[in-house]
Length: 159
Image 1 (cartoon, rainbow, N blue to C red):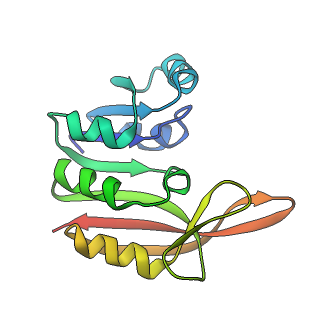
Image 2: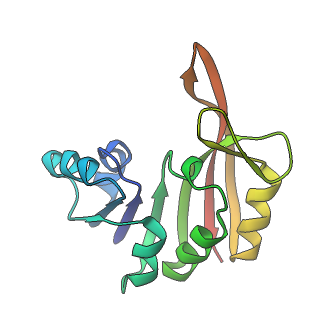
Image 3: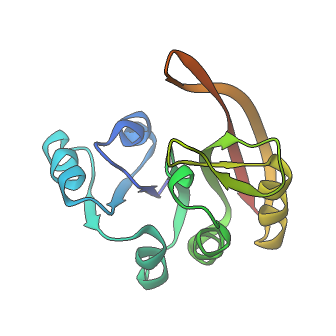
């Protein structure tokens, strides 16, 4: 991929997994402390301390691959994020992200302070913003109080 962006890059865990397939790897995170930790790993070509939606709206670049690993769970309403990604992703580009699953409608805030999403809501947002759901994998994302949190990994393609 020519240009990959890691939204909410944190310490660079996702970036490490995609470094080998990216000509240029850009990281964005709201936390300056996370950006500092990512700098020490030396895998990103560019790092930016910014809100992901604001960064995308102001970016003059387009991206072939957009990553948002363990990021959407902190957002709630994802329409602005999907809109910003749709505006900056290349035709046929991939948008990869994870969610925690919600059995109810839309999305809801959990006691953990993280949002969970219904797959139908994700699919509706995808269609609205010109994405095709290529893959959706159910998986155990992480443990909380010794219980697995069920989630889903999505791969959307810009059409």
